[in-house]
Image (cartoon, rainbow, N blue to C red; front, side):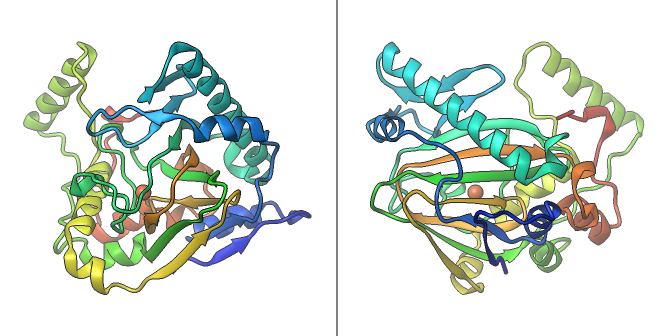
Length: 307
Ligand SMILES: [Fe+2]
């Protein structure tokens, strides 16, 4: 079960310590925001609204494209929102480059999100619900074994953000893998498999938005859905309760630590994709755990996505 590792100044001299804790499945907790965050920017964020388009969970900023999605507002406020999210992304990256040095040379900066909705009682379809325990997986952007590291900031002025966590990926995969959640077969190189892969790549290059999932991604998605749909697990599994107070931050591998957000409004989040090669203990990664348990290769080099 995840433990809370409080990170405060002076930081550990052994900089591997924080990566080690994350890879053990613990949560790094920062009692206050560890970089500058002007109050004027927070006040602006608290006034923003998300578009009501169905299936859109958050306001997203895509650093590579410098583009924002799902925001509801006039062009001036959209521009200002983009500047603030870009600054948050840059400050987070700069701070974690020092704290998580072993990862920073190889990580890929992923999306920044702003979560303006109250999580408690939020009306989402079951598989999109945040208040049901799950490990993260990306349904439309396969990861091919890369890890999902997320850094959160609660900018709510008065309310905590409340989470529960449960067993880590390793024990969930051991408990359910190969039983209720079948292991995908390894990628084969039969004529049929080769044709199927070629067709997918062809469709993808002609603009069809088709996720090129490896067996690893297929399993992670199945496990995500299985956990959310499993009433017995949601009710009876062991749980730890967390409260992240206003203006605190936390970092966690969300593909490893099963988690759910029960309540809270106005959080920011920055995602980093960490290749297995950058981990201190790659053998503990979900990819290696899964390959060990199934005895199968879970990657498909032909469809590999390079972070
Ligand atoms: Fe999640």
